Image 1 (tube, rainbow, N blue to C red):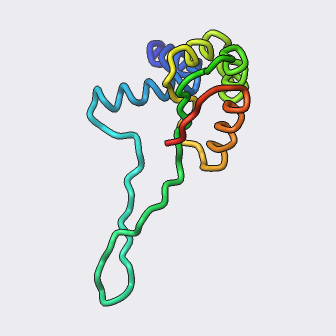
Image 2 (spheres, rainbow, N blue to C red):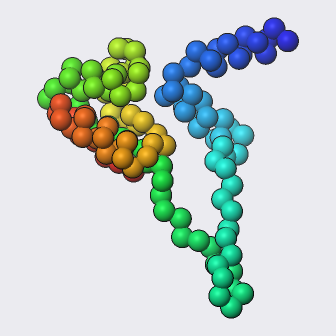
Length: 125
């Protein structure tokens, strides 16, 4: 039981980016998906069933490059993600990398605008 508590403590100390990486690694290793299943809705009209067209609600903000002002981009990434200095620096230097994943369209646009205002290049997917 102490091993399980130790694992739980380690998982609790992960940053958001580390937790997302862990989830992806486990999905690949175990061949499963952490995404919730999508229900297929039946459309009225003649009894024919059709899948509802789903609008994308979650977006990933990807840092393409830091540009000429790497220090300002690192500061902005820290402000947006809550990462420590080393983690934010590693993320910026390792671009292209996701800054935030699974955010709303408005939040993704806001993050993009903040990082681009200090000289970074950002893409929303």
